Image 1 (spheres, one colour):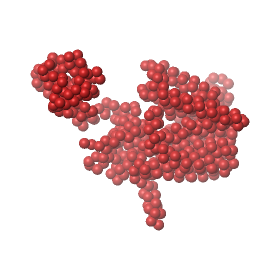
Image 2 (cartoon, rainbow over the protein chains, first blue to last red):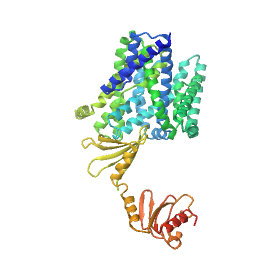
Image 3 (tube, helix red, strand yellow):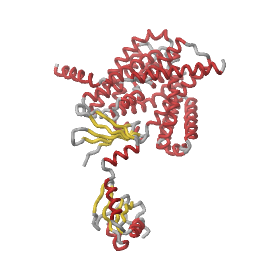
Image 4 (cartoon, rainbow over the protein chains, first blue to last red):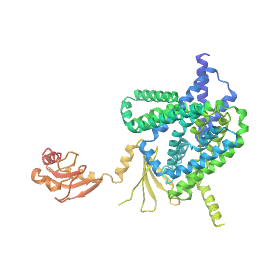
Length: 388
Length: 162
């Protein structure tokens, strides 16, 4: 395949994403589901050559790593600690209400137990990316229910940091003994790295913090890839290694890195969603429509209840509770990431997660947008039910 | 005294807000990148923001200025310019100062340097006209008035080079 053709095809894909992104901006929704659709469309219509496929595949892996790295960068270890202490109850309710439906649905659909655990992860994780975008787009950062929404997102991200290495170890499979060894190695590596990141993060931050932006970008990106590679070889999952590097970097260097790495992350994350869409087999979509829609409805309600209850505990009135619940509904990047892990184990997990994410990512922001109209209705219903 | 509440917004920044006397909640979000966002709550839904204004670092300073953040300093500046031969200085008490934990009288400021201590700033609050029994602490800022040379000597004295 010639270089010209390779550029043409990759360029066309990225341009298509740009158009999709513009459309999303017009509609005021997040582009993530549209990227997925673009990927599905590409897979159905175009057949890319091996060269671009290869590029998109590697790009998608880098995208997953960068997504988690920037997530780790978002939080300081102090924030993580404070949150764990202050919002335990909401976090546990969230886990119970939103992990369970996915796991149960997985078993009902006849997935192996591990597949059910993966589906539980898919339904559990609110997309912190979509949630924070909704909050800032609608000018709600100053609202009283906002800290609750953010706290839930933080706790989920922490839970995911523990969940991913465990699942990754289990996925390698083998005999019971081998699985046990893998699990212990993965968890130990994770705990050790987490401890080191919290303890000696500032040292690393100082070492990495060079004046020159170009050098900083190269150091950070290189470091993230090296740690991700080592994590992958240790069977901990590359993304988690990247997450830990993000946690370890703090202060000024984190602020500067965020600005430098974000454009890269946006590019590769878009490629990641396209790749996921490309891999989907369109023939399997009709079969998963019904379970995905059912799951979307059930877990929208459970997320809504989580947000409602959390906001109520914070002393927020009905409309704010409604907003908190609605903002938590959308699932996104990490649900896709988890589903991507299990594609070889349960092929239907891919299309199921894709349709599910599409639905929740559209329902959530729409509900959040119309709180003024919908909350009073719900309020009246609840009052009727109480007096009824 | 306004009761400010501080709330951490993980991944975003910090929010400070208070219930204003005129029935609305008012607050400022300090974003991590230094942007400030001023918001005011709605009357019919006190949990939500009716309006918010995002300001850059410099704009926020300008607005604070307009709201009277620096009237005090400005007053002082005009004061020193008005009175010929009078100087005024804010002397921070560093960690190593010999006067931390001592009453103000121990400095013998007026005898040694000919300047007067007119106020002590502590934790953003001004304590005007402190008496000789007033206890100094490291981290305070002492406001001294006197001749330009006297003020320089006072700064040296408080720094421990008396």
